[in-house]
Length: 298
Image (cartoon, rainbow, N blue to C red; front, side, top):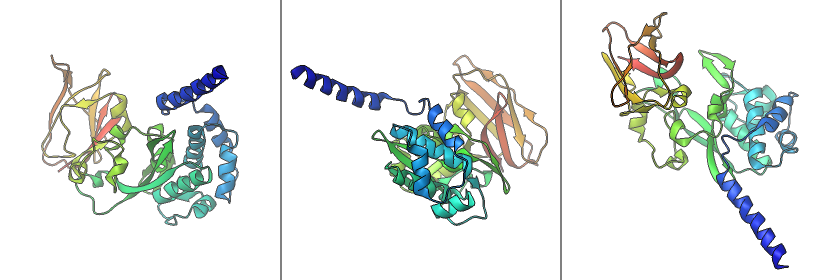
């Protein structure tokens, strides 16, 4: 009897430890993805969709992944669709950010997964650098294995150029690292930064737009940059990968401007670039061919 009791206790402790140490961002979600991407028929019921998405999955995080991938694969961003009701979103298969987050919320509720819809400020366009006039975005936080995570189905689904939406899944916004997504997402309630190293709103407003490749390159700046620059760009930083090519492109120009970049004896890369007075507007900084930041030249 004691042996059986000890075995049961060991299994329970092992399960708790597994949940605590499991890296849900690096988990193999191929089963959940395959299920979600195979469900292409039109659903009218949120409950029925939730049931179809989760019935063959055992773990909470796989169920959430299936929900997230179905939404990002089947709902298109539509600036004209201001109705945020989940049933309407299913019917039209399009939504604004609140439509995405509300549908995620309802699907999680139907699947007994703790989830919240978060309102706040988000930086996606150069016009957002400097000052926000109002809250402009909605996303989700979800509780998996007792830990809260940030997810943004709208940004994960694709990107918008003008009024045109291009579907292109970006896994950066699934269970995002709070230390990274805080550069572009500022929740109305500071609790949902999910990190103690958050910004004040005024600081957040001043920051440039940070793109996911910035974090892929492991960039660590000597100090936080101002998103509004005048006649000079000075940027000293470290990276855990080699930066072998750097360039800058203004929205008003067709050509990329090459940037001289070198590493000093302390292991820091340094950019020190001056601009002509006449050129103004949004400018994109590229490292190794990928956009890492967006500034505004005044």
